[in-house]
Length: 403
Image (tube, rainbow, N blue to C red; front, side, top):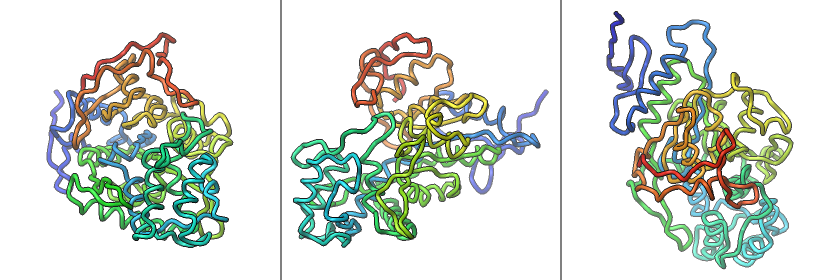
């Protein structure tokens, strides 16, 4: 008979099976999610198995590892502290290839007279309030203050221009300077009370972020058992590195939005993946993982890698995580934020490998039934279509059962 010994780890409080760390007992885990993750760790981990290859485990960051969004937190800090420069030639289209003429015109009208090209815009002071408000509207809502679309002409399954735009707006700063901005924003948002708001321009915005202790514990347990733990995020890589370090994920295991450099400073030019300007969003996350981790380059990076090479575990919370989470071969953890395509895929799980958990802080109420059969698939042009399962059949609408 096997004797099961569970002790407390003095440094983390984590449960251990023998000498192999397991997840803490925590009421935040829904149903048997914790037990199933522990079983996977025991089965695939390298603890006590010399020579075992490190299995790959991948995590989204915003609202998966933490509550709220570190891209938003950094953007609001940047605006309040006047860190955006007037773009080259005063032409706002240089900040994103997908910015619409309407958005460029609105930004020119709100910001154009405030500073010459290349100089700092006073978005954190009274004279720059209108400029700040236009920037916030475009970043937060994807449209100008006059409700005109701010971005167009992109593949909605591979790109989210508003998330890439933060790093593009920081053109002219060095990596070290942007890292400093991220660190300052991080400290402010951790110090602020849960639920706090801040004034950005004339608008009120969220001002707090919290790490999920359960996800911190999960990362630690995976690492202790020899998993190769990495983060894949649609926030700027420099920003994610600052936050991920606190949960023990080193900089070389973080993937986020990247832009080219001109000498020692950032430019708005996006890095390439799969032969096109890219960012880690939905299919773009698969591309980045395949290219950077698995060495698959060119257009093939957008296709699913052979199953033996893929991540065994993945965790996400949004439709922007659908592809890389679906690619996981053992378990797929979803934090329920009522995202239609992701929840349709999770609830209609045909192989039993999906785990659904309420968010660990401020869980959302039950959603109406997810319209999987009519709106379950996000099309490249931004429309919605029926979601099809692995066998080609249309996925039926799904009830929200874990909330």
